[in-house]
Amino acid sequence: MQRSYWDAHFHIPRRGQEDLSVFLSRCEAEGLTHFFAGGYDPADWQRQLTLKLSFQGKLKNSFGLHPWWIADNPDKSKEAIQLLAEMLPQADALGECGLDYFYIEKLAGNKGPIDKDYLKALQFELFAEQLELAQKYQKPAVLHIVKALEPALKAIDETKCQVTQTCDLLNRDPKVKYRIAPERYENPPNSTAELATATLKSSKRNDVLGIVHSCPAKREWIYEFQRRGLLVSFGPSILKKSRLELAAALKEVNPARMLVETDFSGEGLGDYDPKTLFRVAKAAGSALGLSEEEVLGYSAQALESLFSKKSIQ
Ligand SMILES: [Zn+2]
Image (cartoon, rainbow, N blue to C red; front, side):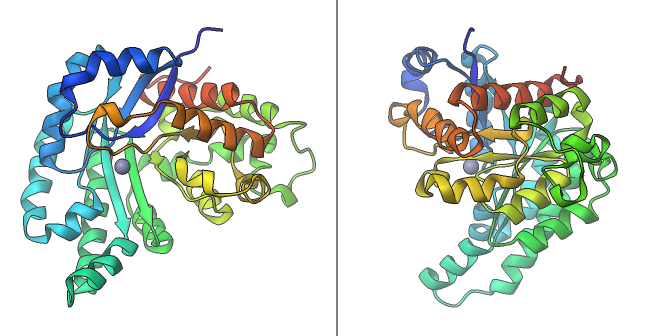
């Protein structure tokens, strides 16, 4: 089988250009061929545009205002969101957007007195606005949520997105639904692979609102996001968990709606290690009884369908 895997989330470094061809062939040697960049701020969107051609169709780009950037630049954010609305047609996705209350608490610790409530409210407002923009321009959204599950779900539910109406995907097939509410179903799937196959057959691109990147390996989070039509993407943070902890946490996950990422944000592409992606896939796979290749294959399939606007078949 030809390998053509995706890194579901990484960042273009400030000095990414110099070693791009070396970077691409280094990754290709491992079977990693496609990349989905997370967006941070207007300067980053520009970097993505500059580099996109050089990636020869192997880069999907994403423009958004990261919740860290909003907390660091509250005065610039209104202007930036206008620019985002203008530039979004040039992106494949909207993001990162979201809420990071941990970051705001950290800022308060480092910078001294700041208006935490104001920053949280601002992150929320801009998150909701970005979700609306994603809907308006029909772009998948890339979500960054840390220590803010409840308000994040509120923002998602309040956004009148097509997905919240159609995210019943997981309800159409009892076998698929099993992962979400096992106690309610008499005929659980025989295997994780069977569950994934059932999901792939019944999926349409429009069932997916977007991606929760670096999703914590927590059952409740996975359950809430997947039932809202979001793909959950796991990064290196899951490597800190034991296989047993991970197996318990991933009990609700539907592997056909699961991605893997490096969450790379280094200084230069020279620091990028493609093996990180394989380590994450291996950890997730061993918790689910899947091989590393199966996890990477499902992840690639989910991303390809997200961008192809066709049904996953
Ligand atoms: Zn990111």
